Length: 69
Image (tube, rainbow, N blue to C red; front, side, top):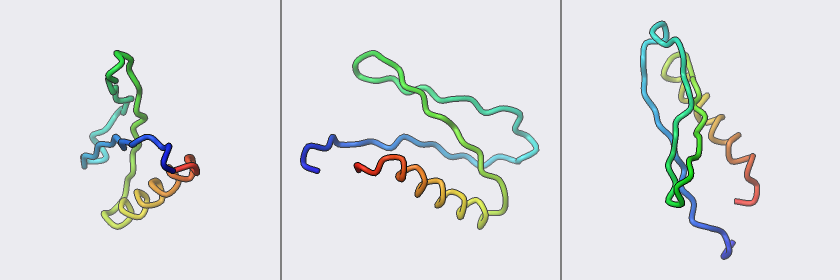
């Protein structure tokens, strides 16, 4: 792993009343090279406990996509 680049995980969270949300889009990230990357936003709904459990599963699944790290 000595050749692995230093990584940054970009994420954001906010709790809103479920009935108030009509649409969620992508978030833009500007890179030093002038390019732009997109971050897919996700929605988790339920009680606090349900949201926490779903978030843990999502994080585990996310890192499963990158077995090299």
